[in-house]
Image (cartoon, rainbow, N blue to C red):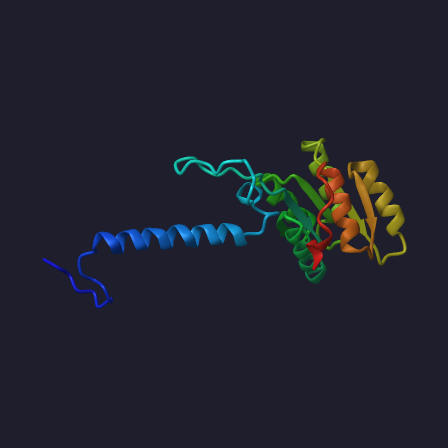
Length: 193
């Protein structure tokens, strides 16, 4: 019994129709591979001797570094998170030190960026707690707009932060420090566009 779905050509396929369909699928795939961005898919570049993985083998990609960003200023947090995501990181955000430590314990990050002066639980408390439990964890402290910002940043490095940034700073400066601490090559120049 033949079903009619309303599509043109719903009837039985001829050998010629099957061959034409297969050729179209093959050509479409070839064109898509040619148009693909060679930098993001190097094994698909024309002339590359590398082979595509077999159909039953998963494609394994490098995991994106996971960053915990702690700051009480939601607007600054969003701007920094956007820059970090564009540079290839995954970002989880917290609005104070207590929430940041709680999020880290639930899902550890590869790196923590924290403001120092925040209401409720400040960044110094978060640095002490995180460094006590995970001494190898890279932490970036940031502070600004206070009379004692340099003192706070100095204290943060003595308590466990690996780097300290005084606000305001440019996003490329933060990305460079992040890449250094994660031992990665610097982010692409176009990552912030």
